[in-house]
Image (cartoon, rainbow, N blue to C red; front, side, top):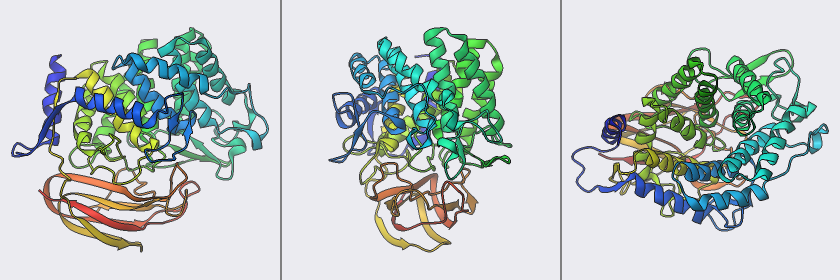
Length: 487
């Protein structure tokens, strides 16, 4: 084990376990990786080239767009980082089932969304790298070209970034989910083909992303920009894991390709801001975005940094992988909150990809690392608590809290609330976006928010109305109960 890895392993373990824990289970990251691979291939993969959208009976199966693609990315990590020989065969089947995009689409009613095509382009490029299947490469190129050649995504006051929906849709939204994936896809295709046009596209897209999506104060990227033709306005502090992870990954890759260290410095700055600003009080990542955000690209971005001997990437992976071991379900699924209790209800592909990819990536760097798993939430008492009116608050004494409600109670988009932890708004301002469910089904008994502290104390969660906007809609919150972690 490299000295850097050894030092960071010790630091990571200090975050997730206290010396006086006497009843802890001890395992290794290699064991956590094996469990994650078994869950990925046994619970979510259907065996013939598709992904189950959740871990409950009757979940739909697919092979396109960000939920399915996040699991393809995770399987690609298993093939590359974990050297899983069986993964290539499954990736080949997935590539065969993936959609074949037409050259373009100019009739809005029949067009796919721009980010769908770019998510698929990245998945197919990954599949090509793992399998060498020329059909996967051809499909990746077609998916990437589909957005550039379709006039329905162009225009507006900031034409260098495309609309998400054909002709802008009703909300005139431009999302970094399109642009960040387009940058990554272009880099992957450049590596695969040596066509300089792909590199030019990646460089131009990277600059456009920094121009329109980068926050003005911290080196993090918001995910939403509204463009109604008169100007481009950020929906500030919506720091999706997916897009920040893609921008980190692309910065590392562009530094390698161009030899310009600025790209790497920018990637490191974003990663440091993720670690500093998007974690709970114990330094564990807090996924406060809606269920439509996926965390796997952030894992890939941190993995890319770690493999360039950047301390922040390795520290983040080891800290979060060690914490998440105690937050998985009996079937090995992970929810959105690595520092929370295991999810008590249905887990979706959009939720579980982060934890699965995290264990795979961390173990590939430090497989024999001991992870101390005291299962801290075992025995935590559930307190029934109906909270429907905003503002509202929960006051408690303990070292952690998880709050519960129905995800997508008013399915499937509008309705969110602001969250203050001990009087301070979470750095990611989305708080709880309860009604957004990518599965398009209401899921009762879902963890909507979780937070932990290094030591027990008296704390207050305050819930305020969310500011109405064209994407998240108006205010909504309905909590049904909470669990408090006692010391």
